[in-house]
Length: 138
Image (tube, rainbow, N blue to C red; front, side):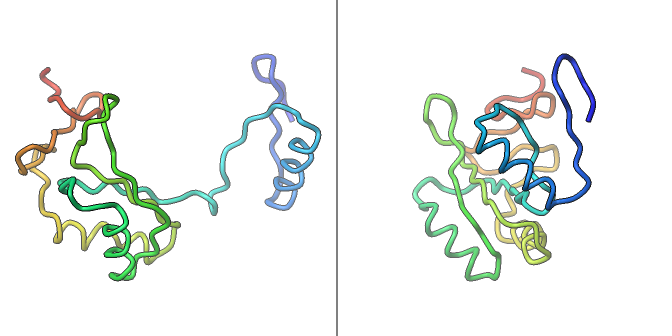
């Protein structure tokens, strides 16, 4: 335990102690922040160029049929609610899930060598700020 910027930072030796401390803090309504354990973190993959007429349930079932243990699929939208052609797939961190990047590159070969999309209507991603809808020059 150490004090950092008028806050207390606690480092625990193992997962059992981590869970026990979390439970104690929650039960006693203590305000705290923690990071997720490595084994509980999810793998997140962005799929580009997905037409908006394909629903996320169909994308999820297609990925599951290919053997990927998909937890959830979300469509990424802009702040104004307009679509981007991007889909976020959430998977557990397993060897099966990590293999998702290889087949998707062959299924959706929409990535431009400089980072933009080759499909019309799909926004490019800025190489500077990592946001979508504009190039780094703009």
